[in-house]
Amino acid sequence: MACGTSMGKEEMKKKLGLRIQDLYQKKEIRLIDDNGEEINYDKVIHLLFDKK
Image (cartoon, rainbow, N blue to C red; front, side):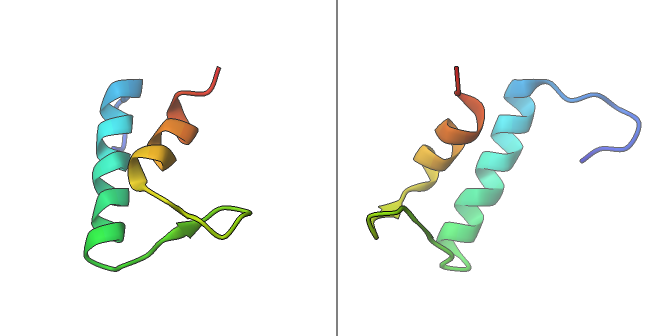
């Protein structure tokens, strides 16, 4: 994202979270799981960053 700087995990999570939220709210882009259910943006962030 930023050239020449390192970004911490929390900062990246925050920036990406805001971008995904923007896509959901303004662009009406949705992610659908295998069962045809919509995945909310909080769940998307959790899946991307909170894996163990």
